[in-house]
Length: 512
Image 1 (tube, rainbow, N blue to C red):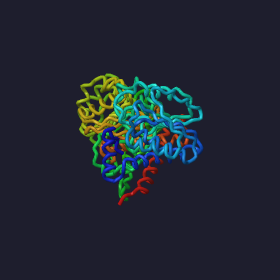
Image 2: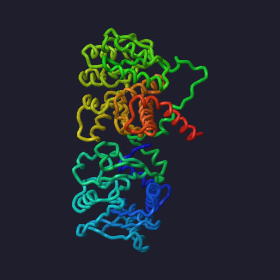
Image 3: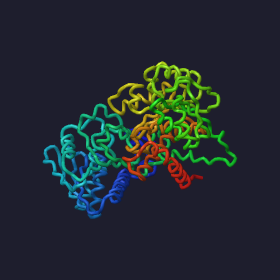
Image 4: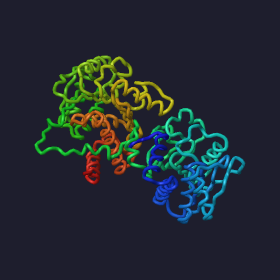
């Protein structure tokens, strides 16, 4: 799914109106109907709604929704909020419909009005401003938003975007008043600002509601941002040929583990095998030998000269993919061996954990990384590698610029993990949950991506599918055992079910 800027969304709206063809008021009706249906499916009937509608088309959506809610028997109070009385044409039309039908309990409020009291049983619908806002709210609207946020209410639901939040860069906005929604119902596409951690307090839980914008406009409009879902991942559902053998599915060399951190090697190794790589050799310090052979009998073992950490590069010729980092430590000899590995390796690698920390401490090594390699930092490792950033937008910009400059793929782990590619595009992930914030989760991801890369998927495909599968396994684990109980081993255990889930989706959505 594409993620567009606010300006591009307006252009797609205009294209839809001109070419479907559909009038703007009917497109507004379509959007309000989708919101109405969502509310009916998630709340019992006969709710108490208080709707705050602004003077623009977001307000028009709110007024149309007020009519639908009132006609279906809900208790509705509607407040049309403006400073100068000027409304957009479609907002004016929906206002008149409410007046002519005497429904929705419509009242006007402005800077001279006493702000309405919000009752604890009322669901607030925020339809003040959409994603086209370009400056922080001030004056009357700032006062109104502050009033809504501080009032006791059942919940706040924002239409399209919380009023006051910008669609993209909010670096100069977050000190202002912004609606703190419990739920945001975004129309057709998510907004880029939804993917930044600091905005979660405003968006709450967000959902995407399709409103039938023109497919041709969506297809032809270019954007560097994407939100990946099952449709984009079903390519991994490729059947194996009858006479396939293990040599057809790659041989991974995984360099992992050190004294006290052999669990990282075990987790990454098991995940690599579980996603289907044909052969795996895990290079470990001598003291980890028995641990690996007992924990993962399917893996072969390469023994380092050091008893406790990675210090030498084994013969690389047998391997189709090299992954390094989980638990390897940051010893001086480890750094020297890592530099030696980078100089000897020409194919894309998977680089994680301590290997990224070594890059951060020795930035001259970055230029040695094979192009299209995949780096999988968590936020702390990313900041050590690239720097600290005040907000999500500036961090994302730096991530994309790093990928473009270094010709590397960066998988920045977290909620909606972002995957930046050398061509400047960035993909946000749709799977995963907070239960995956647990020791070893990143080691599992390293193994998954390396195992996919070994099977012949491109680095871009391996990163995208690996992140999606990892998160999907986490979501299945959450449903089976609960979010708080998830440990990294569970992610590996539920990978088969994640594969089956995607396989079933691919079969149901097969295109001729």
